[in-house]
Length: 502
Image (cartoon, rainbow, N blue to C red; front, side):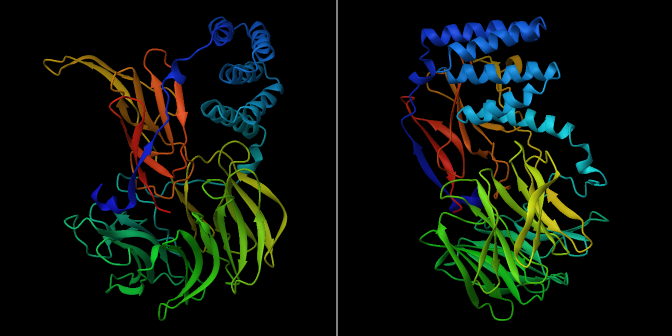
């Protein structure tokens, strides 16, 4: 944790009333009893039609009990799906539209809806092949492939150095020589290759310097890094892309007032030309030059303190801007195709993250977006190489919460560990008992795309589970990533660690 200590602050989450978890009215109990009966008919006896009738009865009589109603609607869709009826998709869509506050149920409805639509669109992935190029415990996804596809730049988190991975041989080589974590206050971050593949521009975090993030350029042979840009007035600086002629670096700057700027840094002398000033706490996840160097495509949050983004095209002189993808769902930029005729982006508009493409000509969108590949899951874009292959990375999460009974005197395990959380498996972590031992707080990582993939034991949902009833409450504070929940002595509130990268 030392290497990121500058990036987090402590936040107090107050007003979490445990009574809300325990307070169950008699009408809810009646709705709950009907649901359990319907569930037994559906899953225990396989009598789908009687179960459907009970689920419809719950929806008719208890619409105010949102949790039970949402569960009933979800299982109604599951019954229809087992019967092969089209009403299943309608039921899943209603869960998403009518009950957005029931997060877990909405997520499952989206996944089931996407799976049904995928079955009806087998031709979308015809001719597309997916190949794994690197899988290891030290894989890092903060760099990108070289233009010729021979290497991948990355951060060697054993030392914090910038390094490259040779795909054909699996050999790894550090380009910087930080050496160890004896000094935990500096390390490499994002990196991007020059068009000719002979240089890399990278972010260097240094907590000892007035400028927190500096931009450096280094040769592929590891020759002496050259400081390109440093400005102590900036809270954050990030490199995104090289211009096709290699003369400029597309960068994002976050000022100390938290307003974001899009700018170009000269590779010759480090001078900066600002193209656009964005709002506070609004920062692009990705930006790219067009292959002809005339435009910049970027994504940006639809509003402050939201994660849903849209995509825009900006002329290289900053004089004009065009909306490329605007949709209520989250749309994030992946990359510009090498031929410059289309843009690949990720979208959750079908329920789960899929790859979409939209044609572009003269800086204008042409026609409607088309689905390229559905159900990609949480990924981080690494971009295209010259011959047209697209690279992306993902982290296979295996963090789960278990409970085991121990002998207080000997410390020996009395009963084997049992998984405490049965949903979003692999993405739950950092459990913490309440002072009275009746509740379990933990962090769940639901964000489909994280811009800080190296930060572990963090997420975007705080969950509290009653160990007596099994019921859970979910809290989504306006924080990007947070973790390590800890209860107050009276059990009325929690504190968390917040990674504040905006």
